[in-house]
Image 1: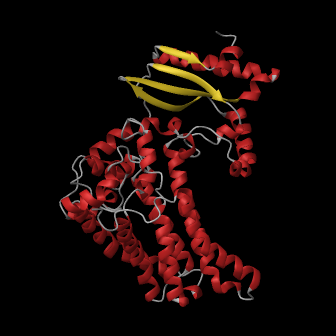
Image 2: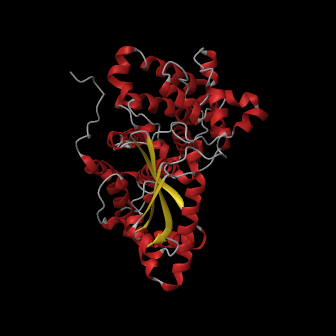
Image 3: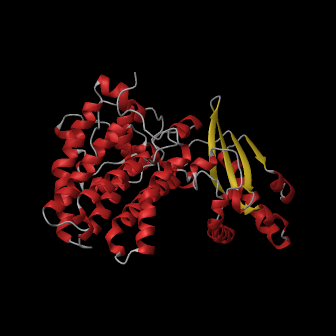
Length: 413
């Protein structure tokens, strides 16, 4: 028998789950079109905007994690995210829909929320104090409780099923766990409002900063320099790092905290290897990692296919290419990025995989297919290909293979 609140009610709807945002969008549109007081239903727009920004934060963190040319020397786990994990985390944003529903209910039950001021500095201070004194310890003990056999097997094991932490892993959990997170994130907001210090900016700030740090902790690339903790040793008890939380996914009886390792220290669950591992990973950030055994030197096909790269949209990169008309509005932005790459970019690491103990990497010449047929662009392309081959030779790469247009263009070969 399936445990209660262990599955999402809309998990079989697929992409149609986003219809659940429809009532909010319809109410906001109706107020704007047909009612004199459009501010009455402004809460609908706020909820939709916060949901959009939350999705954007997760997407930007995902893009950064998949920019291997930036992060490869700061990886915590060396294996890549496989297709099974991508499929399992496909509906990572279910929690945003859940919290949008709860926020809608709160706005309807308490109409006074619509009259909050735009800004109140005291609200930020109050929400921070409530977060540190209530939300952090509440999450710590709830998280430890979820590691008890019954709750872990029926609920929390889903979150731990992802082999490699990724920003989308932060949202990959059961409804029960996200209801607990709703309480954790809601206490500082509710408390500040009840104190009379609530504001629209405080709600936006608290929710978005909360998501930012959740994504930071589930990043597989270390972003916090170790020198910060050398200069401010006590800071390591007040802010966690991707390495710190990654150890929780490896050694699950340690590092339970939300964002502040102080509570792990107080609860005697702080992993003693956290600081050492963090120092090791950050100290290796300026060094070359493992030398690939095989390199495939590719190029970009066209502007539309460029939008299907893992650091653009991970879900599209994991499925066969097809034309998606709703991406057309992003075509001008991608075209501008193409021009920037033409002027300043170098050959970069695009993807990798391990096969039978050998490391295979794909490097990409920053040129699009049509550029190979421009006579004045040939010299620049040849230079990129030549530099990539020489670099591979210096590194000790055993085999390098060239994509079709790279073979035709390069006179070095």
